[in-house]
Length: 369
Image (cartoon, rainbow, N blue to C red):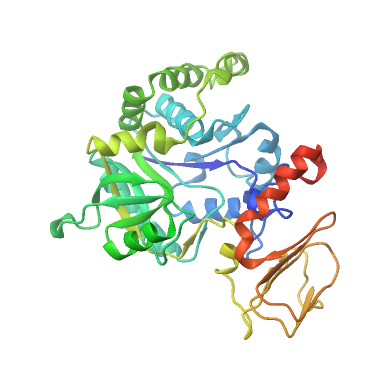
C-alpha cells in the first residue's frame, strides 16, 4: 500500500524575485505548463498513488494556497508545520502520521518543486524502488549524473552484475568541488542525490529511533494526537523541541553505513529547478540560445510576445511584470521582470541570486523577500 508524501517547503531564494517567501517556487508555473510545480508533482504520482493516499507537508502560511491548488487532496492529508524543521521533521512527521493510520504502509517522498520530463520512465523507476522497499531496504532514487555538478549531493553505490536495478548504497557524499565531481562522474558508481525516498514506514521509523531518538519520540507523540482535537495543543508544546536536521543526516547516512540503504538509478529528464540557469536547461531555446519563460496563465493564445531580443545570445528573459521586456546586444545574461522587482545578472552567477534576499532581510524589506 503506497502513500506519496510531498514536502512543499522552502522559499526558492535562488529564483528571486519570481519566488518569494509568501509565494514560493512550488506554487509557480515554471516549466512551460499551466500547472504549478506542485500540481505537476501530484499529477505525475497519480499512476502510482491515488489522491486519497497523497500527503502534502507544508508550512502553515502556505496551507490555504496549497489547498486551493489541490482541491482533490483530502484536508486531513495537508500536514501543516508550525515552523521549518528541515526534511527530517517534515518527512518524519508524515511517516509517523501514516504509520498511525496504516502500520504496514510503504511511503515515497518526492519534492514539490522538481521537474520530470519522462513520466513513464519515472513511474517505472519508482515501481522498482517500491520492490526494494518491500524487501526492507531504505530506498532512494538516484539520478544518473550528466555533468560534474557541484550543486548536488551524491550517492555512491555498488553495482554487481547480478544486482539488477537495485544497487546497495555505500555512502552519501556532500556537494563536491569541481575536481571531485569530475572524478565522481568518471567512476560510474555515483548518482546525484535527488532526495526521492521510498521505504516501509516501520523500517524508517526504526532507523530514526536508533539514530535520532529524541526526534523519533517527539514525532510519535505528535502523530498520536494528529487526528484528534488535541493536535494544536500538542504541536504548540512539542514542535519547537524538534531538532532541525535533514533526513540524510538524521537517518540515511548512518543507515547506509549499516548496509540498509539501496538506490535505483533514474533517467527520466529530472531537474531540481535550483536557479534560473538550471531551469532554462529544460526549456527550448531559439537559434541564438535565448530562452523566454513567459507565464502560460497570463499569455492568451495569439497575444504579442512579452519579450523582444535583438542581437543577443544565451540570454534568459522571464517577463512576469505585465509589460514588454526588450533586450539588445547582451550575452549570457538573465533578466527577470516582476511587478515590484527587476533582476539582471550574469548567467554564470545565477546561484548567487539568493544574496539579494539576504540583503532584503537585513533591510527589513519583507514585502520583496
